[in-house]
Length: 264
Image 1 (cartoon, rainbow, N blue to C red):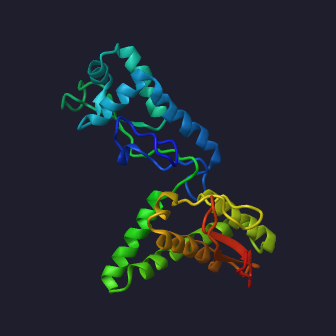
Image 2 (image 1 turned 120 degrees about the horizontal axis):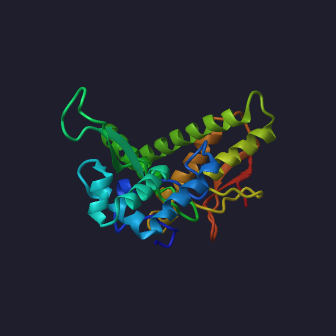
Image 3 (image 1 turned 90 degrees about the horizontal axis):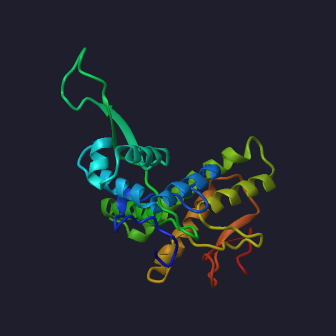
C-alpha cells in the first residue's frame, strides 16, 4: 500500500492485473453504482482459495478448465467451480468454450468451459489519483515534441488542453440543451470531481490527481492541471470563472476564480 491509497496489488504483480477504478469513478461518465461492486470484487481476493485460483489462472499461458485449476491449487472440483464462477462474476476472470480433444462434428462432445484472466483492470486509490492519465499525457507530450522539434512542456500543454476539451464535451452532454450558466457550472464541477479534483464551493480543488508527481515536477504538473481545466473551460460557452494557479497546502495548485480576477 502506497501513501496515496489502497492498491489491489496481487502478489507483487501490477500492469494488467490492476485497473483504474477509483474512489470517485473511472473518468467522466462513470456509473457510481458500479463502484461498490468493483470494491466487492477486489475484496473477494482476500479469500485464500479464490486468490489462489485467480493467481493460478493468471499465470497460465492459456485458458484452463475447472479440473486443471482445482488440481493446480489442490482443492476439490466443486470448490474450484464455486470460486472460479465468483471470479467471473466479479469481472476478474473471463470464460470461453473450446473442445480440448481436437475432435469436431457429431460425437466430439460438448466444448469445455475454460477460464482466463480478464482484460479489465482494477485499482482503488483514496484520495483519487490519475497517474495513468498523467503518463498518457506526458507520453503524448514527448512524442509531439520529438516529431515537431518543440519543447516538451509546450507539447504537453497541448495534450492537456486536448484532454480538457474532451471533458468539455461531457459537460455539455450533461448540461443538456441551452443550459443556464449555473447548470453548466454544476455540470463542470461534477466532471472535474470525477477526474479527482474534488471541487469546493470557494473554487479551490481539495485534491490533485497527480499528487505524487508534484514534489519533483511542480511546474510541469501544475501546468498540466491548469491546461486541463483551461481546455475544459475553453470548450464551453463563456462562464463567469477562469482557471488560475494558486498553490496552497493540502490542495491542488489550480482554482476557479471569478473571471477577470486572479487574486486569492
